[in-house]
Length: 128
Image (spheres, helix red, strand yellow):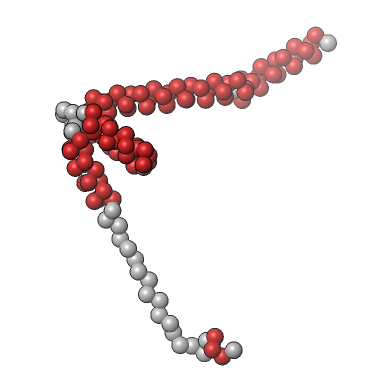
């Protein structure tokens, strides 16, 4: 019976190592959550360095209304800062100008209008 129990324990250990076990996936999720939090904290620190208080407040108010747009702007600001395009703190008016430029490039959508023409044919509904 001891051999059977040893085999079971060995097999369970193999399965846990192969599939990560239930504890492993929870631990992995916890690590991923911590990594996301660290990335968000780093982004917030960088944004605090490149934006003055009024510009930061403006960006936060945008985030309340349009969170996806605010994330896009934050990512763009971080890329600009890392690329050296932003040298000192950006004021609120500079942020507004940047937002206007982004809006004009994004809102230049093309519209397609379908003009459907009625064709007279013998299978019209009037025959019924």
